[in-house]
Length: 543
Image (cartoon, rainbow, N blue to C red; front, side, top):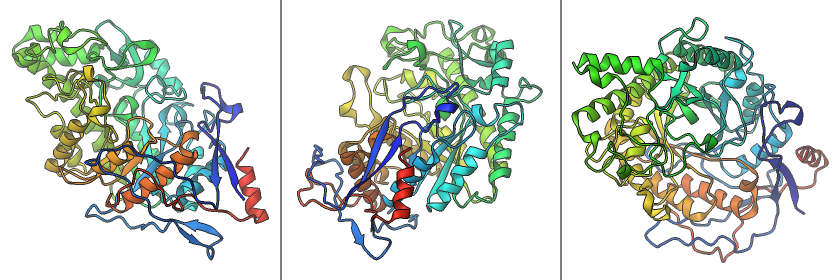
């Protein structure tokens, strides 16, 4: 007997879809007592880390479910890396309710049986505070917290102060709160602006961090009030089921400038992007900094020879091999531009520490894995994003030290990527970038966690995460968050690969995956016997 549970990429209720456009695609989670066929074929060179199959433990004595027997304690010496799974972006509806709770309940049951440590959810500013300043609605999130707790899972909550929509993987649209958009319409300089005057509504410009531009409050005060409201609403869960608060600090929740916006085709991979320093607040700061060093002319504008979004470094005067970035002016500008980003992160994390200290919940912050043009001297794409990282200047050590000052975990992306998989003309090196960040966090004494940047279900990607999770060079990973729960994740081979990956992470990646599981091991989630009450619960999740 096989039991099929339906879930979907979107948990949107059709009645709550105003402002949210998500495809309604169903998927299946199969619970089956038979052994899977040999279908996971990992074509990985011998020098790469491999995943290894281990038989699932079947216990008829515990509610007739297959138990995976994974160890639960977190080993501080790095022998175990807990795995979390990101929930859909629209887990909470535009109306503030938990979407399809029965389907979510079934999905959490499956993830728990696979040995997942917990899940991650975005707490969207645009949903929670949409009805007006300091009018917060946490009810959908409260329902989720209780459900996660019932399943014995942990929860990572992202304070998402950015817009959802317009970036890789964005499956729905959640703008900033309406009252914030109203203020932006009155003063368009509240958002990041490029050299051509394009305004980006993804996130409030850090240039006005300390200016009361949001109905009498500064953006930092608004973010602090939001986090304080979350703390007050969920104080009984912090440090327990709510294990981590990830503090959003920019577009996509990452500490960076929106230098490579994909919406409307503005930017395409592997373009260098553009500096985002042309709103009046950023320009005023640049002018003041230039005056302070006696170079008034340097404060009139950003670099004039930095090119356009989709150019390559050698096409520009600023980023080419021995371009303006090496000159005194270039160094001044890059120091100012990256310094403003560090100050922004420092302000928000200082506020978060003051609110959440003593709760037992970890704090984390996300840094983008900008791996294209990494092999060039200037690292142009990183520079436009605000990371002053070049052949001669380490841009990640200052970030790691800033986060370490507050005991914040640095969460880094692109852990699954290999250099040889990338386009040659893009001069990518995700592996080199990850090694640098691992060394930076080790030097700074800052904890490191990871994510995959793109959806991957293959053994090669999992093997790469296993390899990077170890502390052979620099910091090992304290945790890994998998992107993302959707219909494809629960498909047969994909699900078996995830379960095996979680097993290996629980053992520090010591086992290796053969090219084919010829023994037909029992890699499947629990077999639920046909008890009527259980069957009814599962059938409800199909709706």
